[in-house]
Image 1 (cartoon, rainbow, N blue to C red):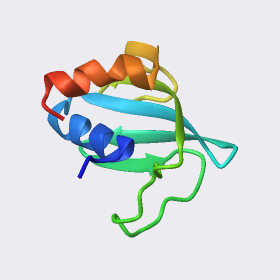
Image 2: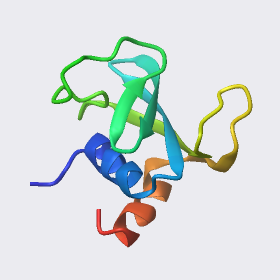
Image 3: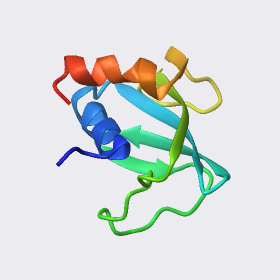
Length: 99
């Protein structure tokens, strides 16, 4: 079974612990921003379920952009590593780590 995009991004962040991923998504026509850090996802604009088995980025989500930000994340002054990556542009990073 192939992991969902959200699970793959969580696995990436568990390996790249010096980074925070800020993922802009569209879920059922509604925009959201998700922070992913050390293997865990949390919405920055909507409530996040307490159950870790409930995906923050569902399979139906459309990934609009992925920002790689240096940790620790400061929303007032983020230190971008890369900004505005598409899902297609981010996938080689996953492949390089075997994700």
